[in-house]
Structure formats: structure tokens, C-alpha cells
Image 1 (cartoon, rainbow, N blue to C red):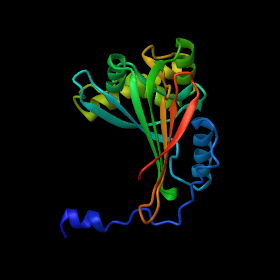
Image 2 (cartoon, rainbow, N blue to C red):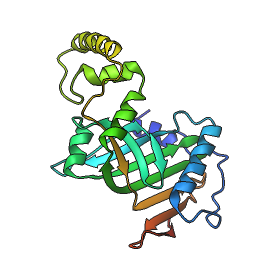
Image 3 (cartoon, one colour):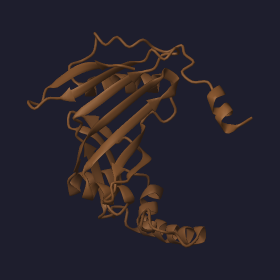
Length: 217
């Protein structure tokens, strides 16, 4: 079987899938996102807080990776990373990002777009210290996204970093940063087995309020 045929025969949006009543949605997108996130958690979606973060590098090339959502509130959708990482460098050059959440058990997708702001040193430090000691040690083990000579090099560096974290439990990596996407567009996509998908987009107006519009599937 060719890859093309194999891919076409894979099932998608099998259902039963929830109905999306776009006449009964809140005035702003965060409340609807929190509702959908809670429903994904209740449904047992694996890692429902995982999201794809898309950025653009200095040459205009898009880049994407999956990270964990750290918080969401009226200020936006937050995640954390090292400023020395690829995404950190890209956000320093072009402080805009797109986020994508996909919850396949419910056939739901949420897309978030907007400018990115960096958290304060205190916010970033608090996030770093809330991480598991092993995760903190990984940050100290070497420069994220840079070439690694060998797996053994990483393992040796990690052992030393774990020792350092154990001896200095309040040590914070200075490059660790909380990033928040301040959305100006948020789209909620509800899949349908017969491709009669429902798409609702929130767009922030100049006065800061939100307007809603349906989109063709």
C-alpha cells in the first residue's frame, strides 16, 4: 500500500462529536477556551494543555514546536522557555506568535494569534522554581537548541547540573522567561464527521472589546 493510500484510509473525526452552539458563547474568548479546556480534561484527552507554538525567524521562515500552556487569563496565553532557545531568539526578533490546540477526542481545535510580551524577572523566576528539580537541572545542563556533540556529553552535564540544583535549590536560570501571547484573534473550530465544521472567530477591536463572526468551513 502506498503512503498516499494509507494516509487517505486513516479515520478522522469519527465521532460522536459535541455540537457547538455559537449562539450561546461568552462575549470574550478566554471564558470559552477555559470551558473547552475543562471539557477536554474531563473527557480524558491526553495532555490537553499541550499546544503548538509557531514563530518566524529573522529570515522569515516559520518554525513550530509543542510546549505546555502555563496559564491563561484576561492578559493572554502563557508559556515559558529559555531566551537562548530558538523560539526565544525568534520572539526577540519578531514578538508575535500563533498557538494551536487540538483535542482529537472531541474534534476540537483552538487557534490563537497575537503579539507576545515577556514576563517580569519575578514572574519568570517563580515559574522556574515551580518546575521539578530534574527539569530545572536540564535547563542548567547546556544551551538549548544548540548542537550537542553526543548523548554522553549531555548525560555528564546533567549529572553536574543536578548536583548544582540540589546544593542551590533557589537557583534560577537567568535566561528563563515567561512569554504571554496577547491574542488579537482566537478561532474555535468544532469538527463534524461529514466535514460540516463549525468555525467561530473572535477578533479584538480597537477599543479592546471583541467581535465574533462565523467562518466558512
